[in-house]
Length: 430
Image 1 (cartoon, rainbow, N blue to C red):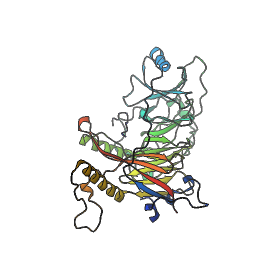
Image 2: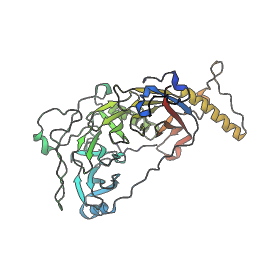
Image 3: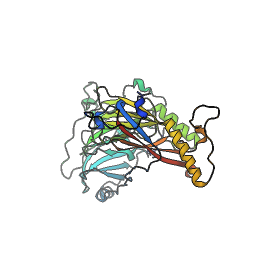
């Protein structure tokens, strides 16, 4: 199965009846911050058609000139694709490929900003996938990326055992040089494999060798390395699952990820190809801690990137016309659903009436005929669309965008219309 570089375009426990009341002020002696409030104890207030949140425009980093020069002068058989500087500006990741590598497979090296090679990160048996999603932790201590067995994407069995409820056992490979070092001990979740040892930095003037003995899998797994590119290890070991999106918590404590089974991925990819549409993957949200402990947050599939709260205590994901909020930690952690469909229907009706008044037209009566309900018929509202983007702007405000989106392989046929921003304001239940 050929896979090009992944690009992204931009029920749980329900809330009690208190959730549709206006947000309440904390009571005397109550919690001092929302971090102390479990997800199921939150109230919300819905506000439609608000100004968009302030979102920092994605910045495309210029390629480090010194590293580019090193590739031109000393690495004739390797092509530099891009560089990625750590937040503290002390390290620069080189993302590159060998001239004989497959088009969707990449390699990683760690450099100093002045163009000195510190360490080769990826083993020869590994191929980095989805290079646009590689992320430094906010504290610059770690780097996360997705990789799998090199050259295996065209040889993967069409139907791996991939039921998410019973995640299959990994069938990893290791570099041949290190096979005899495996002591046969099973790898404990979250533990660095016994045959993966930290590599000492190379001597000045020498070219460091690639690491050996690194587990690799037939589907894309999350990997973690430190700021110098050492102690490389697979953070996830779930053969049959594909991890394709991941975002660090603001406090660098864990990763938020989306994952789908190989069969789901293939089905959606085939569906998009048959329809002439751009493939947008869908996955289930998960928390993956730096020690490898993993918790699946939901059984629902979503193509919208989930988001962290600014204080790193909660996560929000969206499913069609609903937002779900999860505690990142807790004993036990809780989760809650914010049902927004009815309120979004009414706000879409008001929005279209306002638009019609502005244009001097007569807005249609879009309430359902013969129904005692006052809810409008969603089929008559062109502005009633699913959630397509989330932004957790402040601890008490989640913004979300609705829109009609159809992205086609032929760009001229793509449609993005009725993009509108809304928000929910959170507070503790009274």
